[in-house]
Every structure is written in C-alpha cells, then in structure tokens.
Amino acid sequence: MRKPKRVTISDIAALAGVSKATASLVLNGRGKELRVAQETRDRVQAIAQQHHYQPSIYARLLRENRSHTLGLVVPEIINYGFAVFSHELENLCREAGLQLLISCTDENASQETVVVNNLVSRQVDGLIVASSMLNDADYVKLSEQLPVVLFDRHISDTQLPLVITDSLTPTAELVERLARANPDEIYFLGGQPRLSPTKDRLAGFMQGLERAGVPPRPEWIIHGNYHPSSGYEMFAALCARLGRPPKALFTAACGLLEGVLRYMSQHHLLESNIHIASFDDHYLYDSLSLPIDTVEQNIPRLAQDCFEIITQLVDGNEPTTPQRILPATLRWRHP
Image 1 (tube, one colour):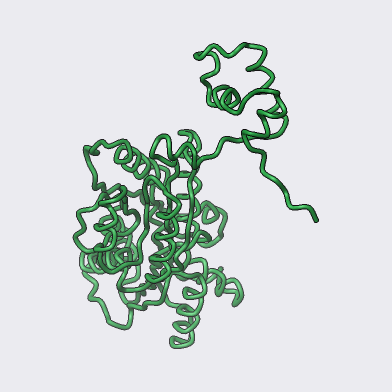
Image 2 (cartoon, rainbow, N blue to C red):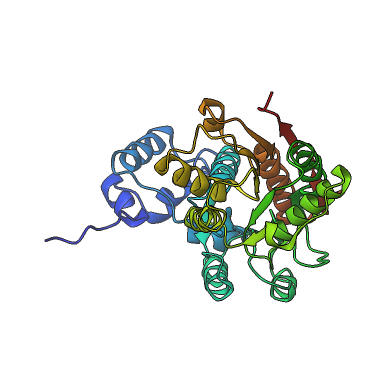
C-alpha cells in the first residue's frame, strides 16, 4: 500500500512552473505586494486549492512565535457540563481562527501532568484547566512560560486567573427549601471530598440545613466520585440500607444524578414521592415526570470568560478581573 505524501510548497512550485520563493510569496499573501504577476498568482493559488495544500502551522509558529492553539484540560469529556463547556469554547476558538486541543485526565493528578506536558510540547499558546491537583505549585511554575487559566474548581487560595460558578449561595437556597419540606431526612451524594466543587456544594448543603433549622446527621453525607456509576452505587446502597428510597436527596452534580435516575428507572421508582434536587441542570429534566429542582450554571458565560482572559494574557494584556465568580440560576420544577 502506497504511503500518502503530503503536498509541499516545493510540489506546488514545480506544478505551477515557478520558483519555490515565488510560490511562497503567493501562498503567504505577499504576491501582489511584491509585484508577482496576476496570472502567476492565479495559477499558483488554483494549483494549491486543487491539491488541498495547507501551509505548515510549524513554519507559521517559527515566524510569529505563536501556534494559534489553545489547550483545554478536563477530567472527562463525557461529563455533560464539560462537554457543553468544550463545545462552547471550541466555537469561540474557531471564530477567532484558533485551534483547540482537548485532553482528559480522568481525575488523576499523574495523568494530568502527562497531558499538560503533551500540550505544552505542542506549543499551545495557553492552557485552560479544570484541575485535579491539590495545590497550584505546578501551574504557578508553568504560568512563567505560558498563560494558565483555571476553571470549574479552585485550588486552595490560588492567585492564578480563575473562572468558577458560585456553588455555595444557590445550593444553600435550594437545600433550604428542600429541607423545609423534608426536615427529618435529606441525603447528600457528592464526589471526591478533596475537590473544591464537593467542598463548596457540601458547605452550601450544610448552610441550607442550618437556615431551615434542620440539624445535620453524619449519615446523611455520602461521598463517591463524579461518575454516573458512583451515583448509581451510592443510591443503591442507600436504598438497601433504608429498605426504601430516601425521602429527599441532593446530588452534587449532573453525573451523579444520572446514576440515581438509572437506578430509579430500573427499580420502577420514578413515580415515587422522593424529593430530588441537584447541582447542574440538564434539558432532559424538563421531560421527566419526576420534578427535579436544580442549580443551573451559565456554561456559555463560563466559556466566554475563560476565553476572554486567556486570549488577553496570550496577547500580553492583563485582564481587568483575572478571578471571576459567576452567579448561577435556580430552576424550580416542584410545585
């Protein structure tokens, strides 16, 4: 089988019957400026188009010291929130003539180091990261080489540019209403307790209970990870322990609720009287017979702010607000 051969500028020059220098001037948009004949310019461009010639991004990188590429690091691309964020950010990059490279870490700090190093070796101009790290030391060091923007979760008291959604305030309001309706039993299903989204949403849960005058019980707090399978397993174990579904439940993310709903569907519990609320919204919740109140993040705004900050930094400008906490919206579906 013949190995495909990439068309080079030398091939275009030979086919057009011109020198490599002339073909280079035309294909880099300088033919008219340097008085290359119109007929020659048209011939070179027609042949390049016919052979799907594209100039080397690496040659452009050497000329401009910029790759026009951004890197995005997320825990998993199949997570609904990260999938929507990636889609929004990719649209913004495409409109700006930039390429977005996406890497996944599976919430593994060692793998995160590997994928970040891979992106840096590909000369990305900046990184946008939802990190699984417990401290920001590596990213502070990396930010001396290229801009880094953290999003979705914060690492301790980092001074790096950051865009997150306020988790505590809307969660507290949501849980307060949930607790007033179900004061004797309300469970929290969360992800890894070391991650800032889990900490912030648990803090909001506890604040909501306090505002409702409901004393928290240690057995109400259950942690796993943010995979749907973890939500399924935690809810299955809870139902087995209680001998019934819980009266009220707050899930800390859309993926966890996905696992809960799968279990409920398999065990014919979707018509039960359980009162469910969750952080993160999904358009399919409007189609369920079971009403679910949610905290809805403004993911397009999250992507827009990350893009705005990283492109300003790449251009050598200091963002007016490098750390941003965005408000969320409460979606009430219970009557």
